[in-house]
Image 1: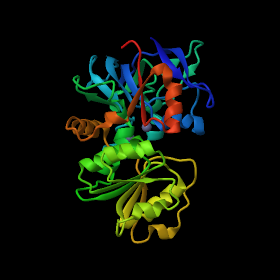
Image 2: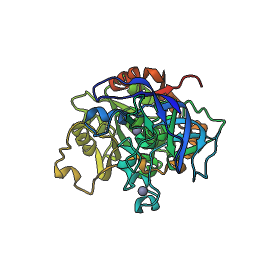
Image 3: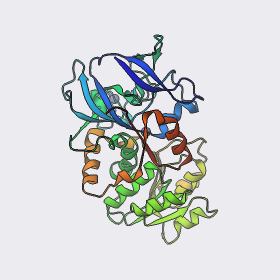
Image 4: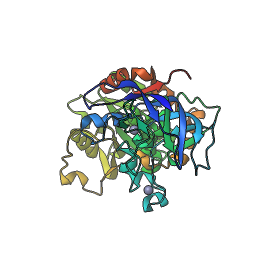
Length: 365
Ligand SMILES: [Zn+2]
Ligand SMILES: [Zn+2]
């Protein structure tokens, strides 16, 4: 079928709206009519040296309505509402242990823009193959193919135009503090970066009863939003004594420090505010190598990287949606909508930090 998609042809070019030819759903695949898609910083990694064959369609926080299912799909039917998350194989030891984020096929299925076998289901007007399986989905299009495994069914009474960001950003930030390194009542955490990941962690930590939630960010508006969403204190990341400011009044230090920036200097600060045996968790890649003195890990402090919050999407996303319905995860405050064709504006604004979570709303729906 003919679809319209935002296509990236070269790493340094803007996205271009183009018509592509999309295959029928194959074995285990599902055709989804797009309603809206969240925009995540990972969508721009192919601009920064990640080796992906272009032309490429990205987007990995899709939400839409099932239009057709391929052979072997038993859990979804046309008309179902779905949110798309990351893809996994379902057969490797990690998948069988309930850790699909550690799937041995994670890279091939999510970060190459191709199916696990290297094929793609989309072609350009001149017949050129277009990589269109980014995170199993490539949802910056009016229709997209996904696997049954990377789709999460959601209730038809829910606002599908808002739910896409549950598939990656919200799941990653909230999963970090509810699943991977669970914080309990009275816990303390420091969150570096008040973007989607950091703010999702703030809301989730507050819902879990954390007592002390300190947020660090460069933007005053984001610090204010963090305070409104449950942070107990906000510190300017540009303060030359940022580590001391974060530690102020925290006695022996924090149980958890969450870094959403991937910057070495920020991770050093995050490690320096931990209590003995505390955990510093990274959830985003940055531009530089980590330089950490060994003494930063003394007294049993842990440094780790959390991918997709260690969550199983089909289990965790419905849980987060219930938390939202209960008024304790007001994620809609993070969203700014754009039309799909406004993808370049959305990229500019989220890169500048002037919006937190762009959502591309698709035309004609
Ligand atoms: Zn697997
Ligand atoms: Zn993402």
